[in-house]
Amino acid sequence: MKIPAKVEAAINTQIKEEFDSAYLYLAMAAWFEDQDLPGFAVWMRSQYQEELEHAHKFFDYLFEREGRSLVPSIKEPQKEWKSPLDAFRAAYDHEQYITSCIHKLVKTAREADDVASERFLDWYVNEQVEEESTAMNIIKQLERIEGSKYGLFMLDKEMSSRGTLDE
Figure 1 (cartoon, rainbow, N blue to C red):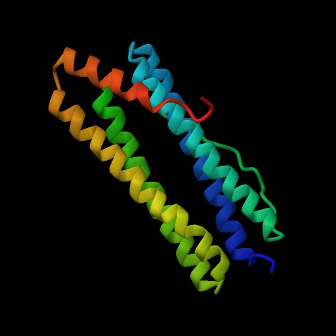
Figure 2 (tube, helix red, strand yellow; figure 1 turned 135 degrees about the horizontal axis):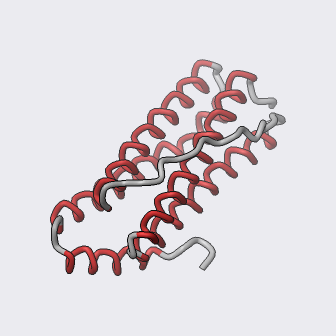
């Protein structure tokens, strides 16, 4: 069954949001590299790859439903943060924003009586719970070690264990 036009448009908007997210995390990775925090940079690169994967899932879903992706342009991300804590607070705020976008998308699918899209979006709803929780846990760790160079060094080493999706 062809995807309703209103849902198709909303998913195209979300594809843009996912690419914007990826670009933001890549900018954060670059900032962390510049701050000599390679573990945080690895974590952010992995986050970048994950957001690209999210966009691609939406992209493919549109074609499965006889829709079309418009491949929207992305916005230039923020490039500087005051501290690692500031960067993760920005990441958490961004994830909350993405959660609100996903919730609007679910509502759009529901209003269009598009059960298939609503079920497809369940994965994203659950993913956003994880995304927010992970960012908040890192914020709490950074708050605990604030001002401790040794603590930051140890957390940076731990952050590199996430690896990247292509490893």
